[in-house]
Amino acid sequence: MWAVRITVEDLCHVYSPGTDFEKVALSGVSLTVEPEEVLAVVGGTGSGKSTLVQHLNGLLAPTGGRVLVDGTDARELKKSDLRRRVGLVFQFPEAALFAPTVREDVSFAPRQLGLDAREVERRTEAALGRLGVGHLAERSPFALSGGERRRVAIAGILAMGPEVVVLDEPTAGLDPLAREGLLDLVRDLRDSGVSVVLVSHDLDEVAEVSDRVCVMEDGRVRALGSPGEVFYGRAGVDAPETVRVASLVAELVGEERVGRPVRFEETVRALRRVMEKEPEGGA
Ligand SMILES: Nc1ncnc2c1ncn2[C@@H]1O[C@H](COP(=O)(O)OP(=O)(O)OP(=O)(O)O)[C@@H](O)[C@H]1O
Image (cartoon, rainbow, N blue to C red; front, side, top):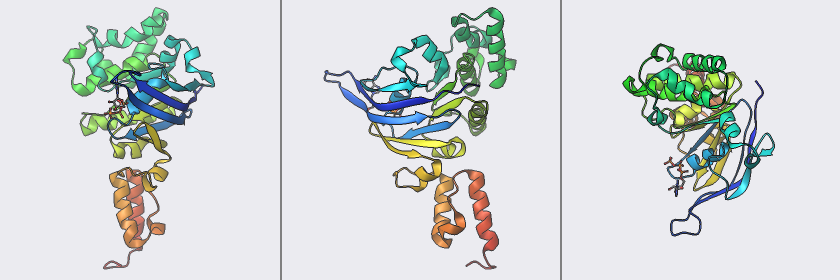
């Protein structure tokens, strides 16, 4: 698949400018969403994450700065094209399901694109299959579990064939199994050439799936880099459990023996290495 690059340059966003409710939500944000990467956006509540991602598909217009999609200013692109290319899945997207059946709900967006009926059907079935909800196609979205409804809502976005998918807190409120399933989807999207922007409060899941992490604070980029750079650096973020465990062990035996693991499996492997070298009875 042809992969898109989104460049955010010195982006500023002010809500309700010139009124008593004026709020500067973003100031001077610059970053790039590279083709075929998972970029996590983390940060405290109100730090500007949702505002930032709504600029990626033109839902919000910059107060200052610009967003470039493969070098073209997003304002010059047709809004409907941009929203098809950059699919935005809001927090709790299941709240927007409306059709009598799952299949009709998922096919709604591709039908709006003016595609012929066979192409709509092909995309709908592919998206239902990808999200593992094909067996629910004739059911009412309202008669499903929360996790199933969320998958149906995401299938509706994927049926548009986006090149970038933005997921705003996709695992919020899901049980561990449903959460794991969504993280598998994130990896699967990246592996099939779709970039993913993942907004998350859950640093452990960010450590598991992201290629790079952007830390937002008070409307600015506080840190941007690989999970290792960000979580072991001085970004001031709380680290994922995996990193905290590895850091504690590194304090005892030295970082050169533990390294800087980020993902669960890497941390387990690092600790195993340390234990194997440890003489009987401890150091
Ligand atoms: N429509 C709006 N009108 C005015 N202010 C807003 C609006 N939406 C967000 N804000 C404010 O802009 C700032 C950034 O909000 P934003 O929703 O982008 O943060 P966030 O990092 O996504 O937060 P959360 O993690 O709680 O979802 C906050 O101070 C918020 O109160």
